[in-house]
Image (cartoon, rainbow, N blue to C red; front, side, top):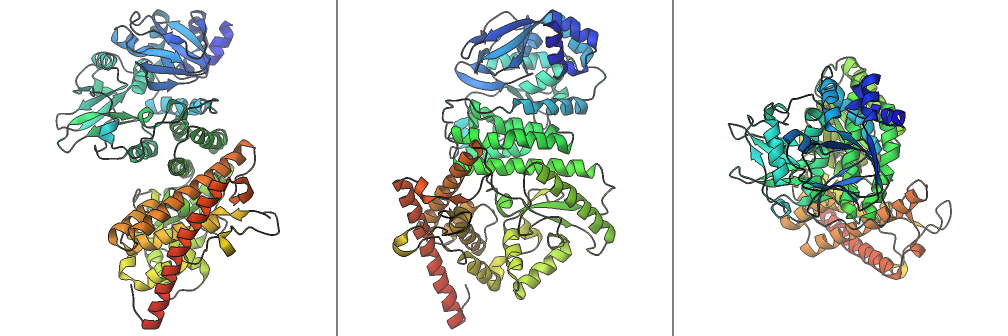
Amino acid sequence: MVQDVADFLRRQAPFDVLVEEELAALATTAEIEFHPAGELVIAGGSAPGEHVWVVRSGAVELLDGERVLDLLGEGEMLGHPAMLSGMPVGLRARASEDALCYRLPVTALAPVLARAGSGISTEERARRRGAVDVAGVRAPRPGVGAAPDVSHRPARELVRREPVVCAPHVTICDAARRMTVGGQSSVVVRGPGGELGIVTDRDLRSRVATGEVPVDAPVGAVMTPRAFTVTPEAFGSEVLLDLLDRGVRHAPVVDASGTVLGVIEDLDLLATDTQAPFRLRRAIAGAGSVDELATIAAAGLGEMAISLCDARIAPTVVSTILSTLRDALVRRLISLAIAGLAPAPAELSWLALGSMGRREALPSSDVDAGVIWHGDDGDPRMRRWAAELAAAVTGGLERCGLRADAHGVRADRPLFARSTDAWRAAVRRWIDVPGAEVELIAISVLFDGRVIWGPDEGRPVAPILEIDAGRRPGLLRLLARLAIAHRPPTGFRREIVVEHSGEHRGTFDVKQGGVLPIVDLARWAGMAAGATPTGTPERLAAAARAGVLPGDDATALAEAWELLVGMRLDHQVAQLRAGEPPDEHLDPRTLGPLSRRYMREAFRAVGTVQRRIAAELQAQQVFGTGR
């Protein structure tokens, strides 16, 4: 039994740096506890700092009253804030599912962890933590309840209690004490110039409880400087995706005067049972090889989509979460690839295009991508370097189960790998002399693009390439023609038209016939309105505000888009559960009467807008007018 405990601890940070004798000695002090789901592991108010628990299997919730502050999985410690502060345990810990824990006495643990904290870099410790974090991505438990709908609530309404704020010179011990008294999992650190940093419960676990930093050091020694903050007006869905994109779990809410109103945590935005995105994001960032990333993606992406749907997270939010995690996967693949290449001759940016650029990817979505570099397009060194990077990243994505675009929108193809000047020249040529369909597709996916890695990270692609649709009536006409090219699959009496032969007989392609027409309409309308967002709902809203689309039409299209995204996601999650590859082919016979009715109404709304745009295009041709 002692050897089993030692073997388990050896695989977990910070125990993974202990020598065999230290592991064996620590394992002999461990008490094995089994807690059925719902039973308390730690009762609040218990004696200060006598034990620390390590979760062997299952999951344990940290509770402030009945509010869940954190969910700890395999290999994670609890009880360390009381050990650090010397105060009674302020929070309760409860098994959220059957949990097996090792209880270790502080008298045996602290000296060993102090030795473990020396001689290992913070970066190495973070890498080792990331390597085991994939174990925390668990399949959803039966009976998962619905998550609270916070998508459209402003941040000010999501703040639950007063924040804990201190100065950088306050000791870590005192900061831990304040966190314990305040029932918080973080403390905001305000610098002399008003700048904000943050220290979280995980910082205490990973750097202080391990002995890397002493408890009497100033809290500024372990804080994350320049904390990510949000305004009180930011919506919950925006905050959630920003946290996920940055790989952090806390965001101070700061008003215009600089006052910290509170701190929003990931668990304020997603239910306890749906924390897989944050665990998966952490695992991706810590992966040390493409093999690790492939294992993480295989273990986590599909199960995460299922668990989010089980928790009834809005399909549009699920789609954006999937896109954000794919961004993180691409960034990590780029970092791993660059480590094996010579220095780049010029700066390069990686472009997420198509559904990835719009943050509207689903399990079936392939990966549209491109690259742009700031240098001579004819430089063979840069072209060769970009090709090697693109090949490595594209191959890595394939190993992670993510297909490159079947239509050639790929960073490893010359059409989508150019210098800034070459890109601008190509776009002008495509607009002024429209030719092949592939070039029209290229223009459309560029309008949907975002830079997700490189010097222009976070920017839309269109401004970088100096594409201003508002000043180019010809370009708007091209986008309008694309917006009416895909018609909804409805025929006589508005019945849904299905395929009558082939592999998908009796089904219809919900993406091609339902989603893409709305995406194309939103792109045209958003560009005509001068909107910079790339997402479909944001473009429709901007078009309504600018008067490009009547408000009723914009609302009808947005509702149709949400309905169809939900149907696509439900269909694909059912396929994932059955072990089948997700696709876009829905069988109308599997839908209830109400769903079929809603779908027909959605298609009718799309067709109405398309017919009006077609009439406007025809009028422009007859009378020579421009929009």
